[in-house]
Length: 390
Image (tube, rainbow, N blue to C red; front, side, top):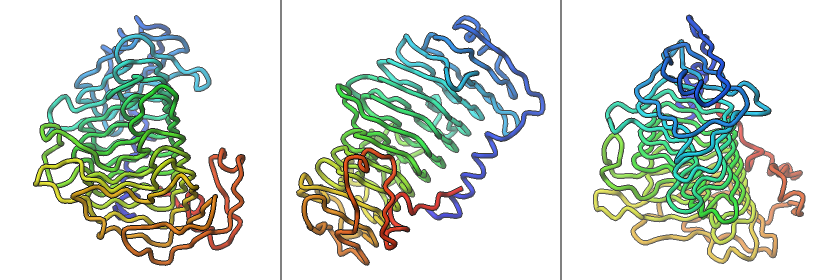
C-alpha cells in the first residue's frame, strides 16, 4: 500500500470521529432496559451514553446509519469504569450499519463473538465508516472459531486503542473488509483459549494498515495475512487472493508460534516491526486456498524489522507447497540470536541485512513493550524506528 493512500485513509477516518453533529442529541442510560429502549430511537447525531454497570448482551442493531457530519455514537460515560456487557451469545451485533462509533465499552465472557459487525449479507453494499475505540473484549470462546471482534464486509473502518485478551478464533477476524486501520491496540493470549491468531485478514480483504500495536503470545499466528475462506464468503467477489495491499508496520510482537504468516496473499508489506522470541518460526509462507483460480502466495516484503530469536528457531521461514517464496523480498532487517550467532536462513538473499546486532537482551527488556537499541545503526529499524502514518 502506498504511503499517500494510507495518509488519506487516516485523515478520512479521523474526520469521522472529530465531526460535530449539527443537531447533536445525548441520551443517558443507566441499565439494560433503558439502553434497549434508547437503541430504538437512534438517528444521525445521537450520542447514547452508558453509565457504569452491567448490561445484558445480544444487542442487535440493523440498518442504522448516521452521516458523515452526524455519526451515531454509543459510548461509556466513565473511561475508568466502562459499562460491562455480559450474558448472551455476543455483546453487540451491528448489521448493515454506517457512520457509527462504539467507544469505551467492555465485553466479557461471550461464547460466540464479543462484537460482530457485518454487511447483512448484502455484499455489494458493505457496512461502512465504523469506528471502534477504547473497547475491552475479554474471554471470548474459549475454543473454536469464536472471535473477540468479527468483521464481515466492512469498509472504511478504524479500530484503535482497544484491548483484547483471551479468544477462540481471532482477536480481530476480517472477511472481505477494505480501507481500514487497526492502531494502538493490545492483544494478549490467555491460557486455555485456543487463539488461532490475533488478527486475520482474508476473504478478499484489501487496503488495511495494522500499526503501532502490541502482541503478547497472541495465538498460533499473531497476524494471519490471508487465510482460507469459502468462496461464497468472499466480498464483494472472488478474485485471485485472500488478502492484498496489507501493511503491517510499527508493531511489537512477543512470543507466539509465529508472529507473521502470509497465506494465499498477494504481496503484503511488513516493515519496522520488532519481533521478540517467537516459539517456532519467524514467519510462514503458505497456500491454504487450493482452488486453481488463486495465485500462489507471492511478493511479500519484509523490511527494516528487528528480530530477536533463540535456539527454538530451527527453521526461520516455514514454506508450504504451492507458494512462490522466490518472489519475497528481504531488505535491511536486523537480527539477533540470543543463544549464539546464527544468521537467518531465508528463501531469497537479503539485501543490506544486519546480523548479531548490539543489543542487551534481558528479562526486563523482553517484558517491556518497547526495545530501544543504543546502537546508532538500529535507530531506524524495528518498531522504534517507525514513523507512523497519520
